Image 1 (cartoon, helix red, strand yellow):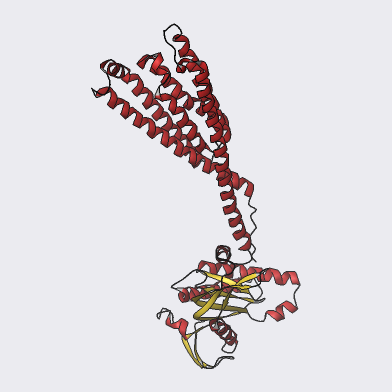
Image 2: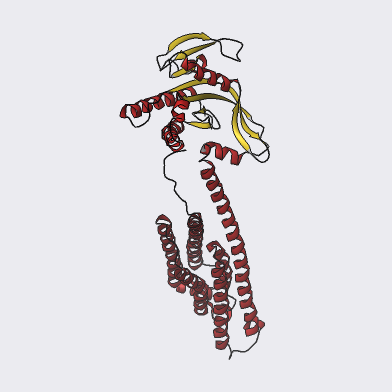
Length: 437
């Protein structure tokens, strides 16, 4: 209904941007968790290293001797994850997409941390005990957290690398133990091959979970974007507030009682103008007028509910509550008249006069229609009364008339002219009417 240019939204690009942002936010949470984990591990290792009596003396001495190296490793990983988090924050702030090569390189670095720790355990507790090092369990932790990257490829990659590194570590240690007496199942390659296969299967399971979560995120984003798109498109035909209301409320909605202020606006002598002008000229003329009029109504918290050919009906106080609905309706009316005067004075439009009527009261708002088509409408005597008041502006050479109910809600902020009581068609009792302009 306006002269504003239509902006075409690339919904595919918007979907990709939203999905990328969600993946980055998930990656940021993952980096935060890992940083906190290794910071906690540094504190725990420090406690073990400097608290006597927790381990036999020879093991406590080893813990103490290895503390500088282990503490440095833990803090380095913590700093790395915090740096990664800062990098993700930068990508989010600048709306950049993460580089796949960097993501796989990061996955390789992170999944190698348990391997490094197990090699350090060889010198700390000996090769035999290192085969059962608790560091092995960290593989599962990294595989689990890889799900937060929402990329099944990274989950598979993490599981595969973990399996390979664990098997190579076991092969290295078993080779060193080959000359020692005694044999247990934990010192056989098939045993560690099975453990490595479990790591790979864990990566497969993580990939399946990541794919399902990714699909759910995509569905959620698509639903939100489709709803926003519907509101934007629907909002070109009705107010965006009404579009949002219709999309939110159930189709069987039977209406709700609201206190509203109704505005009727009519373009005077429009029929004479339309009879002597070409249809495209009439359409352009209406677009110029409705352009600023609709904007003015919206700016004052109202909505244009219906177009009536040479005018429209607007409502204040629905579908969104507005305690100052009468004030906003009067301010919108006065601004419309002022802007119309400026256009007339500048000769930018065909000489135009309008009549505006305002009335306030209770009305039922909601959907009316069939299963195939529904319309958000306002029903009540307040609508009929506002229409009658607008029509009566012709008889009083007035441009803006309001009911006594509207005047009482203005708290004397405007000077009004009392036009006395008038009996309108369809009304059993006379109504007191006031002129503002």
